[in-house]
Image (cartoon, rainbow, N blue to C red; front, side, top):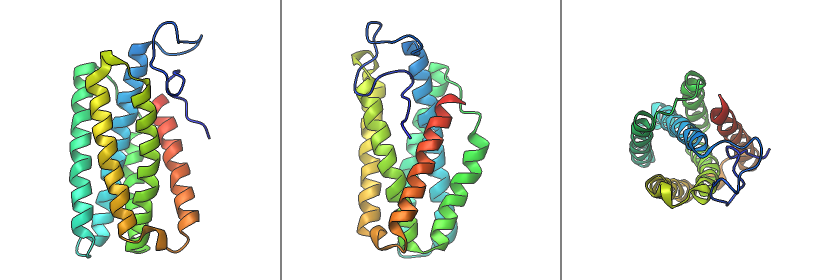
Length: 194
């Protein structure tokens, strides 16, 4: 599935001359970015909460708590942006509330490595997503771009932490990873629009 980037072409900052018929105005594209990033950080928060519900006392509990704290900081940033920029949240947030927790808890019940495989899959999709967004933002959105790039680096740290904790040794890693990546990409596409 190909992700639509709010009407902007991948890797191109949005300006009036680069837009095509049917593309969002720049303000609409920013609204969409904030909405989907807020939804993603909210979903990540819920995934880690689901993992912690199962693995709180495990040896990877401290790592999960650390990643969860970073996701809470990312979410707070997008909460604040939604207010200051007047962006609306996704109408799907109640679904992501349940689905994120369920994904985190289900993979944690499969074992520590499966929980870490979930983290790798989600963070790899988020890395691609944030990189695409950063490429679309021009100098007039320097603050938003800086935040996205900072959060992207932390998401990559989460991926690396999960790999170091044996994510790739999870039973059925390739299938689990592909399924979670597909679901994450679908969640991004839906959250941009609904």
